[in-house]
Length: 626
Image (cartoon, rainbow, N blue to C red):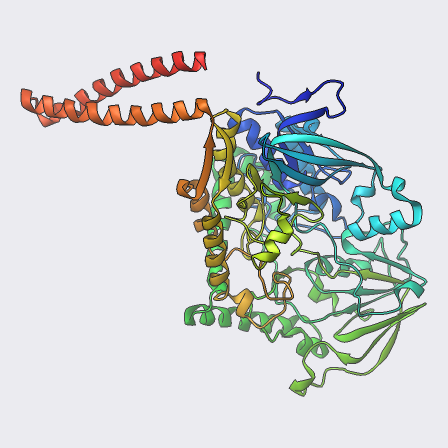
């Protein structure tokens, strides 16, 4: 095995010695796992390494451990098509079960030993002369990779650099794959709210849940009403947490729908689906297809045509009725959104609305204005509804006692690849290049010109508003493997998307987003930056994205063939020419000889077999000599 296709140590005792990896993958979440498994399954390649700064495997599912964390996409659809799980215990399984599933996939494909945890890839630059990526990897003190970036910096300020970073190493790779997730880096404390430093209680983000904090008998303030909060808030006042009270601060209401029930209901599904999926051939696949096409039908709500508007209004009417039936009347006004359904991420709920009927859980849209030693001040203004509407929703000033503050204000989803610094062919920084072009972008969300042999899985504009991100990541993995195969086989030295193709794709994408509800729905969402650039959502259906990934447009790519690759390419073209020519001559000769049309297919098969046999023999001889 040549060093091109194998992990090896280069330069021996030299100071510039380094470890070489044919493929280097950043991130051990679902996307990184998918890439690693498919490298082994499709290409038969196990010469890769996955680096992840966290202390465990699973990405966002490893790090998000708040009470009630669960998948809001049916698990049969939120799993790899190449490694289905027929033993889910529920339709929407809890986070720990998803982590267990991801671990089982790693064990099944024997990639656990290929994953290096507590290791951060902080920087990578393309070496033009060598045609390799040179990456700086940093070993972290155990567990510090699970901290947010801001918490790590705070720890360094208090305890010194050595408390976080242990050492660095330089490695090189032929191919660099980013599988960095988006729902990992939590948002920090709101800068416009003073007083955090004097608060005497505990403050933590739901994405970094602190189980060392005893919530028993505590007054809790929760900042945020997104999907995470909808899952953990209903549990705070119940065992084992047993909080005294919860005050939930909401900026604006989400659209809330009932969480879909599985066929037969939760209890019957949990009992019988593992048995039926295991012993009835094709049933799990059929269920997956049913959910997929149901999700694709949901795509109709994201457009801005009259038809899309009518469909949204039907859904909105149903959800407004759901609000009025489910929560106390005092919350009706503040829980009915004034923006279009689908503009923000929707919440599929089974517990949040019911818990708002409890006396010790209070929901408010009063502004969080300051923090004191033992509490917070809300008001004297509100964030929703707008003061201009003449609403009677509270606007008074209110002091709320607080022992613990839990942030559920989301993630930094627009800082792609953060904190990885990437330098391309011409010395350009990727983030600076994105800034020049208007915002984060990539061809099909996975490739940038000027950054050869670099592939992003779930990069800019690949998040769906209606489907499974696992499906999208699999499509991107399969597309990337088309080019990775050529590189690992030694046929291509560099694969890079063309500048004009990337710019055209990004321009068309942003143009289409202007006609989608995320940009036109009248809301402020986490899909867009402050400037209005939407680098998050894919503006077409997942059927179209799958087709784009199945059939690459070769003219959009610049491939630098090796000598062996050029010879193989030439022989391939020659073979196609010879097959066509031989077939044409054979048909003409047969026609002249008076052979009937009914016998023509048999003659064509014989000619094709003879020619292909000769071509295969010639290629085998050539390959042995290259």
